[in-house]
Length: 352
Image (tube, rainbow, N blue to C red; front, side, top):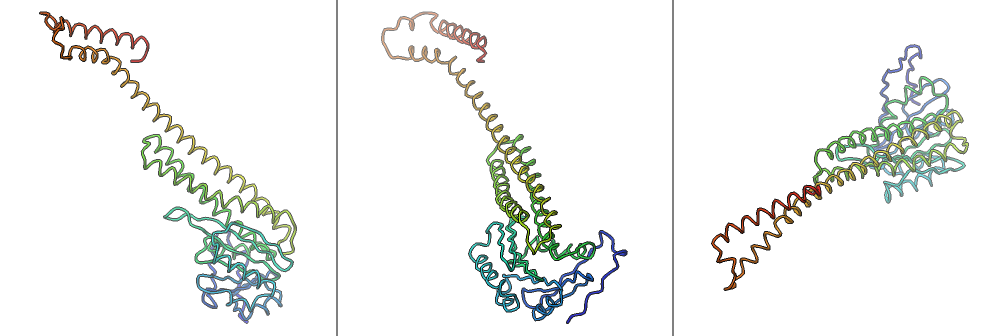
């Protein structure tokens, strides 16, 4: 059996002390480690050691990356109750990798699926992980890189050494990182909403409306992940379970309020975008109406002049006015009088 890792004294452990603990894969795509909550020791483990470690009262965490390995790799080392659940998860990843968050309760285990999104250079990317909590065992299943998992690995050991009292703290760690990820995405979208709003005020071209649609789609995608996560969290804290302590459930209940505020912020941002779009369309419509009004005024002024030109442009042999000595001058005088009169009338009517 692997020897325990040397534990620093709590008096020597500063709050910001980084503890980078990444167990080396015992097999391709599989890592295993143990935590002992009695003396706060921890260390790497092999799959062959799992049963013995659990029997000794230690807590074992197995991580399975389905992009590098298959469920058969760990199936023989799991309790029978988890085998069927793992099979269902593997099939689910193969057919619906972007399935929403869910909670499955069983007498022998608790399954939590955390489905989220993370910001990348292309917008938002799916970020999901399945978590099985059983007696003395934690199994995480994902496909490829998982941002929540990376965040947990970065910070959980420091929390374990400082204040963790039971294995259920790992459930809290995953939920905490999931909520933090949601908040990080929302903060980035806040900046995008403000940038889009200011751009709409400057120019309302096709590219700006495309940017608005993109930001709105990302807000909707985030909302579609936060809503199921909130429902799962509400269901989790509403009923006691042997796999999560009451103290942990109390802390998790506080996250529900955070998710509700997050949903309110998402709704507010979408309303801001909608309001700005309506305002921009209103301004554009006003400008169009103003231009059409000016064209209509010009047409009104030139309409009688066009009529006169049409009349005297007819090819009749007998038109007395065409033989007048001052007929040409009279035409322009009449045109000027009509133009000035219509201009005065339109100005008084505030149409010009």
